[in-house]
View 1 (cartoon, rainbow, N blue to C red):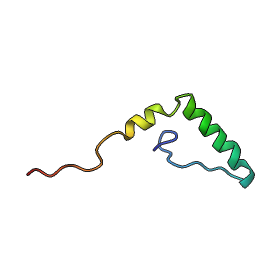
View 2: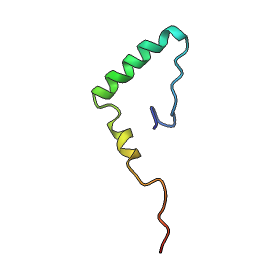
View 3: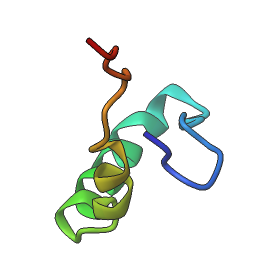
View 4: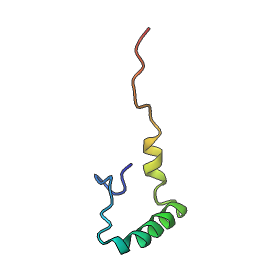
Length: 51
């Protein structure tokens, strides 16, 4: 899932910054900021072969 355009990972930096980053992600999800990214995942991953 893209977190930002073209970015699928988060660079937290220092170890002590991990918890604030997780808290920010939780807040973003609760506020619906990732809804479009999740909807984009709702597609078939594999094409069905014709019988």
